[in-house]
Image 1 (tube, one colour):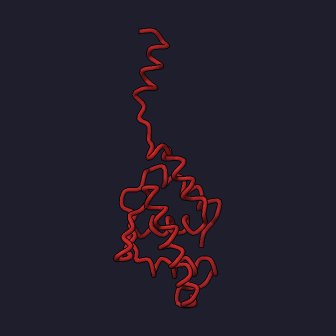
Image 2 (cartoon, helix red, strand yellow):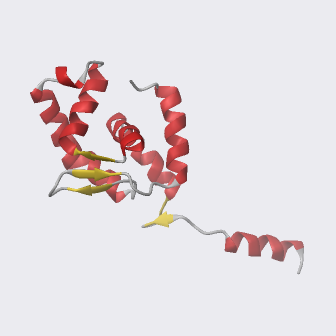
Image 3 (cartoon, helix red, strand yellow):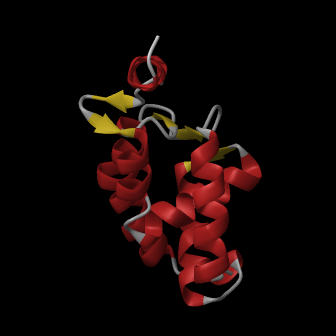
Length: 129
């Protein structure tokens, strides 16, 4: 077998990580493009499971740099609506979280290892609360 054949064999044996034609790396970066989605992932990385109302309150608290007890109800409701109608379905479509809109459960069960690496880097740069 020539060197060229070995190189071709190695390339063809490398698994292609994709979903609907979009690579895993592309999905991770698309997910991290919005700060609130990053906050969702930061929270889930540490807690694994959360209800959407608790998550919304925590995100507002981080954005305003206040304790969750001081989060205004209307601000939490606004973020909650944005999470359930936009961010959580996107994160689920990207295969990064499990989201049940009926119960409001959000889980971070089996994230790809690259997500944890990229989240660590993003947290270092962003320094979330």
